[in-house]
Image (cartoon, rainbow over all chains, first blue to last red):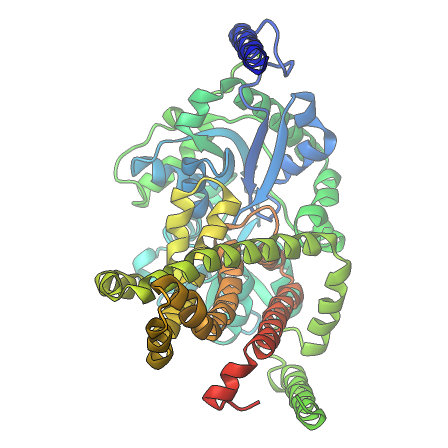
Length: 329
Length: 257
């Protein structure tokens, strides 16, 4: 009796397994599927810094743009683009925020990374060089021989400052760059550790009001006007493995970027929810723009500047780094 | 702890608080922008009503407890095994002595690269860091077993396993407990450090990063105060447990109450 039962159980198990396998086969064909959009992966982890740049992922989440695409997105705070690269490589994150200078340097160094969507483009006064109110430094030329704080060396910070030094007839050899996280720059400059700092929001506003700092120069002007800053990246392997998931993500993000760039109120409403920037600060800080299309021509400017200032050894064709959105869903 | 001691401790903390408040408000006023202790303390209280922070506390403490538990389950048996097999211990000792001094925080970037699941990565570095104090203390405890007690049991015809379970392990237990207490502190350091380096969905360290990026030094400090309080609480609980369980040990070694 028991043996007979066991036989039935085995037969039943095999039948179920075969049926499931059959279903799996038809899934690949896209005829019937558990998720109506035929996504290879429906739940993804997306790394983002707790700053205004990646607001689109939180807007898309709040407005249900991901849900419409059949995607469940888990936004995960990260600490920086440098940590995010090993995270997308190991699969801890599916997609992550990155800045373009880091990405192009990493790609030139042999990393298999693809840009999948645009995120943030700097506008006037988004990144400025600041000095204490009573500083004798009045112009960029006065920075000769001085120490300037940047959040990261050999990155967008130093590149942006170098373009302004060039206008003033200086080069990176005329100043000293030192690394300091944005939250600590104000105090450290006041304590005399450096003479100036390359600062972004909300710290521009904070250093003006709490520390009496003044703006020495905008670094998003001239060569760096409308400089693309940050985008979304994934590993090359991930892009090849999950094309439909990627396309769904790209559509939802593009929609959110459009909303963000058309209505600043949408950004202001979202900032206090995923950053510690309160509503009052959110309404006064300087913000860049949120392009909804990943445009190779625009991004090429970043790679060209990197080449000109020695951040890249040889020219980089940005088109090769972009995972173009599939036009058909 | 007597009332007088408690009072003195409280007076010390209050004095420190007042001096900090005065120095920050009047001493360094213009040179530095730093929240005074009263502001930090207020925010420390307010954090209890912040669901983001509470979720973070839950995540951090869960990683901490799980990491510590796994470390205990690995290090105690390993310590007992090595302690009772001196030749094996001598063979493995050089490897242990090489691995032990590597600062555990330094292995976090490696862990990020190797372990694809965020929580698992964090628990792994916690386990790695808290393994050593438990293992080393267990080994010391096993070395410290009274040889006369072991010999007596043997001469009454007890086998090696009985000697181990009746003499060696109980005698080494207070050392293991001390190891666990030291490891608990280290595990908390790693739990928060891993979040500071790697980020994550929630955690005390993640909260500190968010507060820092939003220019909220008061919230950064308040979250840090909580991390410190958890460390103190864990230490007190474990110390009380040790005192209760191993009263006989303190009598023997003549430790002060």
